[in-house]
Length: 337
Image: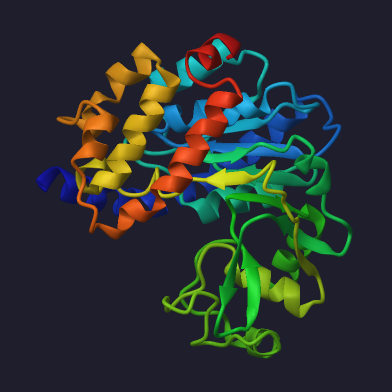
């Protein structure tokens, strides 16, 4: 408990400082970095690499192997030196950019999206490190049209506003359209506790207001939500790409939120499943503390409390692991990367 409290307190202190670093320094760094890259021949995929997530990330990257150019851009957001080194050794041709952060901390999701919207050379798609795309043809379909603000695959319904909004797990951005909204309205992708009064009419036109938010259980505009609302108010589409059951997109979620000190047993079970799937001794040695004193996913599964509602998601995890194994994950994945 003391370790968890201290870590959470430090991260809350560090995050706004990291955001200031991003706005002051990272923009120019990212712009210069992109100028050294070949011109994008399609939608640029961007993956944010968080610390202690390589066992989730490697299967995600394995599914992207062989995708047509450009290769995905990896954005290190608090990843440690050995994690960065491992990825550079295994993926020497992939572009990698390190975001500036204070030790043992990361930039907020909104700050990273802001950085990309302001400095990306072309439209891009965010892919979570724990999102798994089994349909290689999806990327072409995610390319935004001129009247699309974003194109996604995961949606959530807002009861208050009465419309579906996209989640950022796999989401393509129309950079020109969103950058124009940011400049015109003086807002950005960061979490916003209270929208400016000048936007009241725009928000009211899409069912929102100073105390009405997309997420019915929150009292603030979450990451990207204000921009999505303004895009809809301006007549831009929030498009969702339908998926087939034969080639789904599956997402684990919550793997980089909080710390392992406070994870429930089902979350630790998922950690154990992915550590076994990847089967990498280096990663297993570095991440042993995440699951200590647990040793085996099978043992945990046999002794779990069936009344715990978290375990209702077990069939989805089983399906994901079967699909990843069929796609060549496990030890073969390490050879391919």
